[in-house]
Amino acid sequence: MPIRYWLWDKQNGRCYYCGVKLKKGRLASDRMRLMNIEHDSCTSTIDHVIPKSQGGIGTPGNVVYACLKCNEERGNEDFLDFSERKRNET
Ligand SMILES: [Zn+2]
Image 1 (spheres, rainbow, N blue to C red):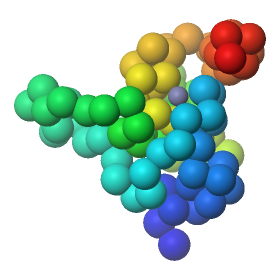
Image 2 (cartoon, rainbow, N blue to C red; image 1 turned 135 degrees about the horizontal axis):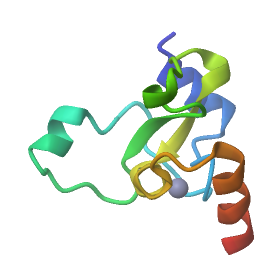
Image 3 (cartoon, rainbow, N blue to C red; image 1 turned 60 degrees about the horizontal axis):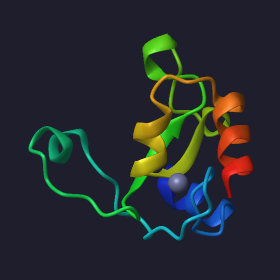
Image 4 (cartoon, rainbow, N blue to C red; image 1 turned 180 degrees about the vertical axis):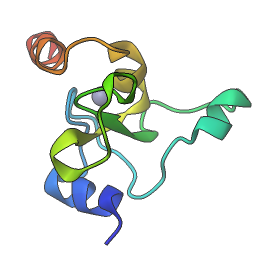
């Protein structure tokens, strides 16, 4: 099973950070981002707990399903700091 489906099921189809309902299996791709294609807030992404730029890899323990908004908002902020901040916002 592709990891995105597995994560979606595990998180009941919700963004890990803000809890918004996400569509199954449709991920924002880097190509779409580069082309500036509009995304709605329920566009899904795979977010890395340890960012790829810091050596994080796409293994089940290091990825969460997140909406594009949270993914971009987090950037390279610490995973725990950001999830706590989002939890306090909602
Ligand atoms: Zn979110």
